[in-house]
Image 1 (cartoon, one colour):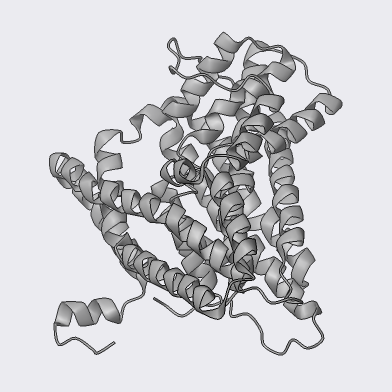
Image 2: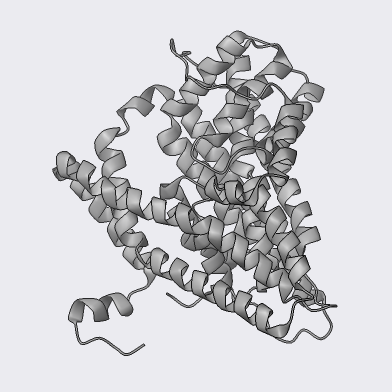
Length: 420
């Protein structure tokens, strides 16, 4: 690209995207503090940014997955199987952290008097049934509703069918993939403005005064998520790579976690994660499938939320919990988290399911859900940041482990991507 003569454009070209996002974050906080009315208007920028991400993500996933499978060569290795194990194991470990922390630092709730007007799933069978029916969803409907399970199923099927297409057809699919990827890059370049608008409007509208009554519960939730992000996940990555995991961990948190924190949607952050995987020079045939799959089933933050809030209700009601039941709660939280939708507040709908293990009525459980929505300003943001950044982290760990195990591998994956 030819260097611009405009000083502002030249500054933007020579400043990293992360630095620009930090500047947008700081300016958003200042605007919310100085001029709350104008800050709410600035929220339009944030809504446009999140809307653009959500609009491009389904098309990106469909085209990229189909193109990757169609161009896949026989004998070419992917890391999907070990990635599935990492996703499920990481989510289960996060649920265990939530259970242990809830017993070490028990929280009690002042249950809300009104409940959200929503209908949670009645059991694990309904959650799994919803996932299965998502697979056979109409492809147009799946794209319109951002049903990533259905999108993945159709993209994989189409990709397999196109593996026997002629070279011209495969080249057309690849060109479409590159074109959609270019659009994604343009959208991501708008992240500083989007973050600026999201921060300004969020602080101006709600602030943090409503969270003070739930400070202990928030501390337990956020503490668990930080512990998973900086202790559990690095240990899992070290187990896979046998080397210092923190450069990769910090890169994923910085490049993916920051935007996910403010978009509050794993689905909306799919384009950001795919762009990061490209910077990390990971194989496209792996991350094209693993990133949208991770946005659906890799839900460590959701597992923590379900476990901690369910046990907060248990402690509030004075119910005794034995070790076997606590372990069962971790398993249920893991399975339920995999069925949580990749949108803001998706995990909260599954709290009544976990509460049912302890005989807690649906009326009380729905009050716990209402508490979850009150603290969602921070809880859901931190949950999404953990979920989404872990998608890239585990994808990179699996790919790098596969590369290290290959005798012919000579190049290493770059864990410090060049600034955009």
